[in-house]
Image (tube, rainbow, N blue to C red; front, side, top):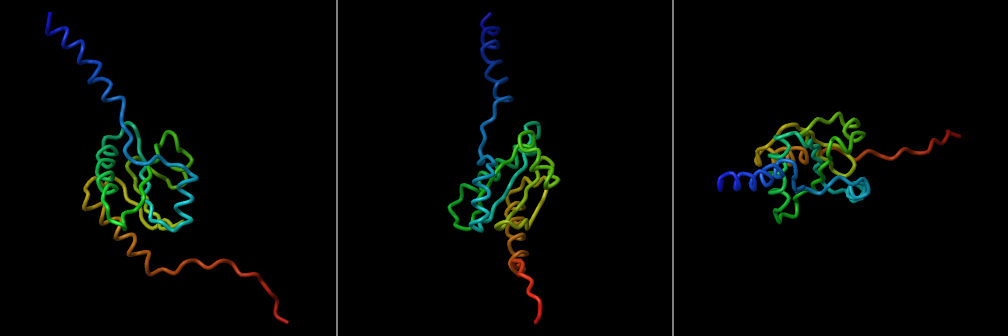
Length: 146
């Protein structure tokens, strides 16, 4: 009888742990994301699905990187595919996809990385690749020759 009572008491605890998940990264908000882009920050956007185990592993590693006190650490956002479907369609995103932005420019994308070293390499490789490129010029007004 005691075993049955313990089992009945523990089932709700274990059952709710699988359905309830603590969100660890900052949730995608268009206003905050746009402000960070206008400031020229480096941003990593993770597309997440609630049924994706790889996304949860990736999220844990991203949280560790975000907790570092390095001033070069980028800002991290998480977009849930079921809530941000238009954003996912815009970038043809799949679960566990990471997008790296520098300001408003998309400079890197990768899917399925769960290793901390590989994630850091993606960020640094994307930044180094974008450094040599000039910023796009604004369009000039057309003035006819005299």
